[in-house]
Image 1 (cartoon, rainbow, N blue to C red):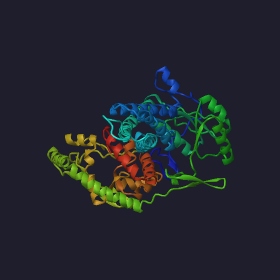
Image 2 (cartoon, helix red, strand yellow; image 1 turned 180 degrees about the vertical axis):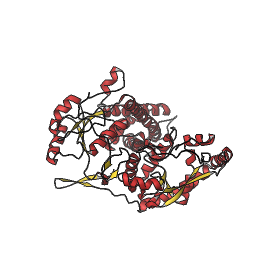
Image 3 (cartoon, one colour; image 1 turned 135 degrees about the horizontal axis):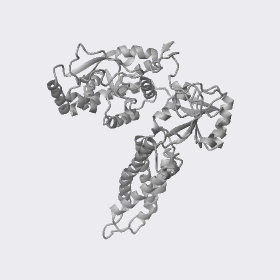
Image 4 (cartoon, helix red, strand yellow; image 1 turned 135 degrees about the vertical axis):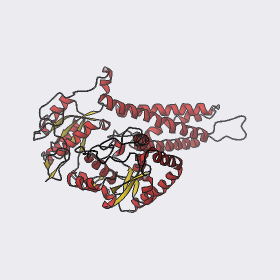
Length: 510
């Protein structure tokens, strides 16, 4: 038995320590921010796919109009007419790239590559059709004339700008509505165990997922009540009544006491009611984003994609990291040298602050930062870490210098860690390293915490770009870090680096 750092209640070491749910039904839609009445018609986001298609069609039409205006040459061969084929071709290509599926926590950066690829393919297909259909000019032509390649290139350029811009605007508006007015699909959860509670907690904590928990179904009613405003609505057989009461359109199935046969019947019933069904796999810790489904006869088999932290992919990643960090240090050398001078002038002490941290495979290394604090007063009271939180930020007395406050607010104090990357101690992207004394404690108390050390520590990470910086939940960090490792790809690294630029604009410290 171990003691959970968040609840101070002895629990088995493998227990998911997340809040419990209410067993007394409160109102289904409580405490929602006041919003204009007309917005309530769109709160469930039921028209998301249709709206996205309409916006893409509008952006494609505008691209054709701008390309034709840009060309501004009299057309005698109907090239402008045939260029309108770009619109339906683009929509079909986007649909084949699964760009009209509503996904959890979908970001604009997830759309950028497939959208740009679809635009290029659609422009090329339109050009090919025009060349085949339009007769070639014979002999000399007086004055300017429309060239198919010229129209196609301008069409491609216009759509490559307009389509992502429209999708970015939609994404920002959707995120605002989800955070400000709790927009999202109402969801029922089957299960009353720790994983069901974790699902509810995530939906409540992260509105960007676009799900609002409105009820719990299970054969066993929950006994405790630590998560507010989620009612127990009966057992799995009461699904239809629960849907009528809550107007839920999503069903999340977590491991529970309900039998597999009954769960299968409930899933079919949910489909008949027009619900989307999502199922937590039994081997949830081993299922990554690259898993797919095959069938052996009529039996579905989930194929688990394996990410090997010691494989050739990570060797290439680490080599690229060291090269990129060296180039980065060269490019920012004026800023780096200026900060070194300001730190030296701000207060007595060294320029760099080196602190032992745990890296890959539990190896200890000195993590570098610009020194941002004055020397510690030997008579100051010892700092005590808040229960369940990761160490970091300002611990105890605020001893930050004037330049230290600026560096911490902008994360510029982390720049010397590029030297750690060049040395090979760290990677540009990975789990943030922790001090040895805390690692030993957290490995005993936090589920799967030690698995973070399968890869090199990072200057930034998946947890940090999701707001888990400073003194935030260490259990949440471990969850996000392990997700990163099990779903690693070069594109994910690039996405995290881009999101880091936005994250450092917020006043948070790590």
